[in-house]
Image 1 (cartoon, rainbow, N blue to C red):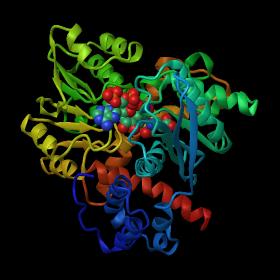
Image 2 (image 1 turned 180 degrees about the horizontal axis):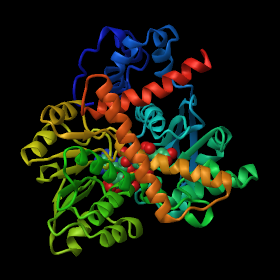
Image 3 (image 1 turned 60 degrees about the horizontal axis):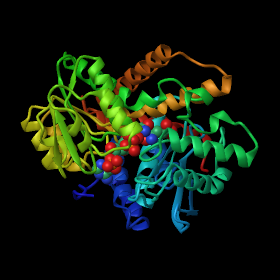
Length: 452
Ligand code: NDP
Ligand code: 2IT
């Protein structure tokens, strides 16, 4: 966490005090909870029945937390041990649903912040899915396919007992893409002796995966930006777009921005960023990142119009629209001020919690349209839910139909967030609106289902 958190209204301050006391070494989790509590305080004040039923107190405590050993053998024959996690946060609206992240920075705080965010994001999709997240501190970078397979098999050998199409349905996240999902799904199938397609989403389209799931998060973030711009009578055509990251979300945000007539000019990874005023070449980026698993500097080495800036973040490049799509807290207040100075109109978060609280405040004060991750990147999990329903009914939808459905879902989420912000006297504040709209759905369901 890079900023100090502001004081909260009395209606939610006690809950936050309990959260910090009970989870003292979890800054990212505290940051995510703080933002939601700040937004929903007026809702809690308007609904005394929520307080009577302990809705918020229950919501900030995961239903179940699973941590486990993941032993595996590397190519040199050495035994390695990682730690695995699955935080099953809320199942009030449906089976637990949320991705798995493999990255060396993974710890309990990171997985809990992601699982907490997922509750409200999934509620916003309106598709009957609960909130969860999991992963491991395993680093896939530089590992052979055989090592990745052995790790995934070991990870699933423990996690399988907690999963199932009606219980808990994982998907990808940082470090977990098509290759990892294949190995994880295969091991689940082997152990359980069931071809239970709907127990994992993001599967290959040849073996139960849905069209557009791969593209959905990035496409959805661009659609969300388009929706916000429309409110101001603007469009994407001709706009310069700054994207961070060069993984699943970033690649397909760049691709959709180009298709809609914008000019995506940056991409990055943990080593630095590239800027390409001719517009990022999507085919080259996909070849480098999806096939060769190369570093981003290689893009500039192969593309004359691009240059590589080492150990820096792309927010110093002037753009009209910014789409952070790498990781949490990657856009701080100084970055926000640089974007504002460069004339940014809108920020749509492709990643989860990429903007620090100070950055969000600076952008909103400058009247920059700000789409928070739980609304702007919900297209991924929404399309996961479409995959689950196709698996359950043994249907296959076309790419075009699926993309059209994604567009409609994003428009609905934008509408729900916009409307909730207006109802609570915060017009245009999509952070408040998304938190309130998601919370309302969860809180009413919790009230109806009793103290469990
Ligand atoms: P990928 O693993 O495909 O790509 C991650 C990208 O972000 C890589 O370019 C990576 O660079 C960079 N990155 C990761 N960690 C860091 C870091 N600590 N510092 C700098 N760069 C970093 O992941 P995704 O594209 O799937 O996920 C990106 C974000 O989007 C995450 O916040 C994720 O939670 C969120 N998200 C993903 C969804 C999905 O469907 N995949 C859905 C909704 C949100 P490097 O290779 O150098 O590490
Ligand atoms: O953060 C997210 O929403 C994801 N990583 C996708 C979750 C999912 O189950 O598709």
